Length: 201
Image (cartoon, rainbow, N blue to C red; front, side, top):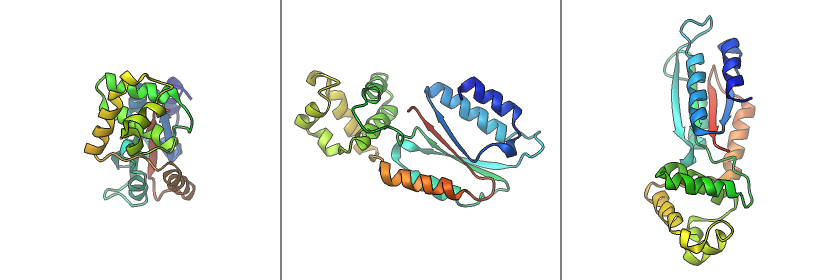
């Protein structure tokens, strides 16, 4: 459902009837607004079934799927529900020459949003089974990105690779992380715990 439909659905649905897993994707601004609306709904102090809850946002760019699942499978120190959000996950970037993902990485880089740019780049690298070392090599880089950019435009990729290494950002393990997430969702979470994933793709 789109953003307006989501807000309408939240408005007329009792918090206890909302699902335990949410995927919010699309424009970053609307992602943020949708997440805020969801958290506000679940925390509605006037609602008939409202409970106290704790919220933890986990950086999806760093590939912390296991950390998120571990958090969801433990009870909150407070009474009530625990909400864990995997933010800006690159997990859903599909394999193939997805020029939209590369263009998003370059656009974010041009806007000086290195964290978001790194997320797009790492997701694309993972989906296409490259390595940071392969991307770092100038000749490899020119071959890999030849379809998208001229060799003159490639210094930004080197800067992003350096940023990833300095900040210890790792390439997400699509297959194993996806499996961990799938199994956790199928098993379900204790109590009122809920998982939220945000992603541009």
